[in-house]
Image 1 (cartoon, one colour):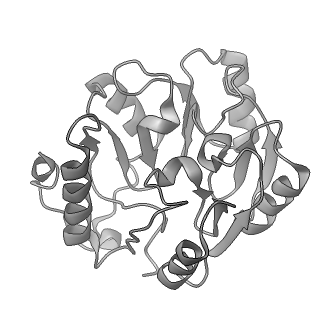
Image 2 (image 1 turned 120 degrees about the horizontal axis):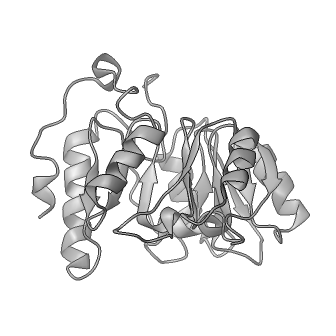
Length: 243
């Protein structure tokens, strides 16, 4: 699996838009079954809970080198992750007051931005486990950097009210292009409305064509397509099967 760019998430040739409200149980089962059916031979898929909940993305943070989980993660959940994820991925449980790690950390494989009030010990763990440079930052004066930004090794999207000067400074810090944008028809909570790696983005169903175009361009998803690396085309019916 040397071609896998990011164990945290699935990659493909297209966007997938997911409708969250309403049919949550049915939707969750459909989403899992589609991903597993289409991608189990391409990328590791791990079904898990964190602290007995399914809000994995808001409670964890990681990159291809490591995964950080909150102290509320049970021993059984931690062992399941260690048994399931690739051996090269470091997994660390963190004792941190700001335990929704996905809200207070945004990272790619090289740099992490963190909530200004995270413990110094947490900052050191982030740097060590994820193998990144760590900077305390805000996004448009919001301390929840993981909620108001989406980041990959190719680019990033920040809160739509982020000043141009701040965008330029963050872009220089991260060494990737950044744009101010939105998700789900104008929502500023970028990190809660989408997930992305170097191959694929998944966004909420309300995300508009314009918003998707911005996502596609800043994350260079078209440029990143490589059918030989991906191992074959995914079926065109993949999105339709969610509904």
